[in-house]
Length: 353
Image (tube, rainbow, N blue to C red; front, side, top):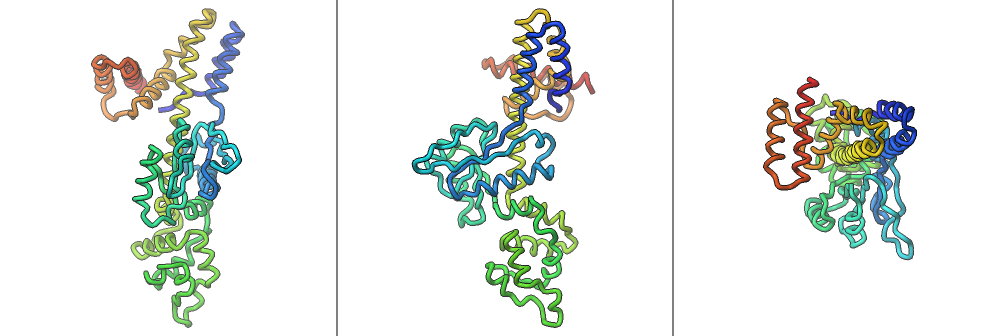
């Protein structure tokens, strides 16, 4: 379901401004606020892995992994939190990605609580012995689900490194599980007889590979290639992005960005209703837009987001009737308004289909 189109809204502002310059200026200001770049702030204490997290997000934005609309996002990294004798940075981003270690301090808890859209992440998840327990404790401490991220693997794979897994693909049949217990064992392992040594990755090549994807990444790729030797590099990268937590992490951030976008559009439409009441000269044109398919469906998106719902498959008329019944059966006025907006949206979707 698409949102409000900036180009059409700018045309509306220009049209209104011809008859009512004051209203046109106000619409322009509202559009500037709505369509300003969405700011993602990466923050956390010293040494938690902020730079790696920012690099994962930046690489995802460049590659398009985070989906459409990512080009409208600005990714920044703050100074460290909780530094003695230094003020904490302002967490004023539209989305705050807060990076944690395995233990949350009071400064972390306060920082997470201060952000309206926050994605807490444990960026060095591969260094934690009891990862499940650590995530449970962190989530309990900060009050928001903390996501695991294996920073080194996530960063290098997101950036397209290593360039190829061909060396590991050739060697995989000859690498035992014992050889991959530690980095040192992998570097020293005697993989093949001397007669075929040309196919053996050198210690330097193995060391570079571990620098990119850690020994955990090596184990993951070797085990996958044992199961399916036909896996290509694209499939291997997707596998590592999943194992590292990068895929889930970037998707969670993307969804937070989309919620910000939906909220901004809802505020824009509310402002247009105010301007229609304040400026009779432009009221007719504004009200025409506010009853358009574009506006009705944008309001529906906002209402669904407010209630934590999504568009349901199936018959749109039945869905509209269901939401209308919900609006009439509740005593919560906010829920009732949202349910009516969703009902109108389903009817408009039915008419547009």
